[in-house]
Image (cartoon, rainbow, N blue to C red; front, top):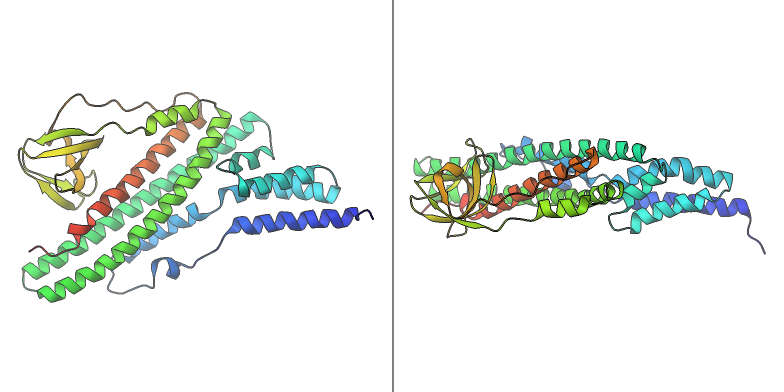
Length: 332
């Protein structure tokens, strides 16, 4: 017996809605992610700020693109009975199953015009990059605050305002908060990477050769040995106002992983990492040349900028993690 065409179209409509529900994912509350507010936590405002940026990166970018397709081609095809329903539902299911291809594929279901697609991807990338800047600022402020909390406790113990036992208890409390902060930052970083892969695929689709150029940009130059020309502090960030995480002495040998502005990311012989002023280091060999960002159209440039910003955010988490061991302990 032949199936009722209307019933088939209704089933297709339900399938499309189920796909959207799957794309929605699970939702967590702020308290589940960052815990309840604690009056003793003077850094709480920065935790909330970082968490709020995570809300953006937790949004399903493919779902946003699919909604447009479902609202137009899918539902139009369902109600009209045309083959557009099968095409658009395929786009939705492809968005679920695809490996970093769902975003551009969903957009293509709405328009095949290259100029229209490039304009949409450029707009989305510009917004994405601005949100990464916001997340970077929030993490920088939060990490600075946490390390200064710990520094204040050590100063109180040294001045006799707190006993050693009280200081250790307070540092353990701050360390607990910081561990949760790092977990939140890593989650955001993972979501950035997932979204970034979608944008790289979109850029490659619109401008072939972008991925190869970005791969060269991502390639890290080999680390180089350097000798400190004088004693200098090693900072949490490439900023003179950042907290100090360690220090290197005159003629001490370190490894330089990369440079950022007027600072070099160094690693000491004990494994400590942080940023030292580049003018305090005598680096062996020639400075490595960083791969140029992909030239050409706007989508390429924005995709390359996205990679650089994500790399900086990821590195800031790694450096902060490396400084955790000594940053939240009492000095002997």
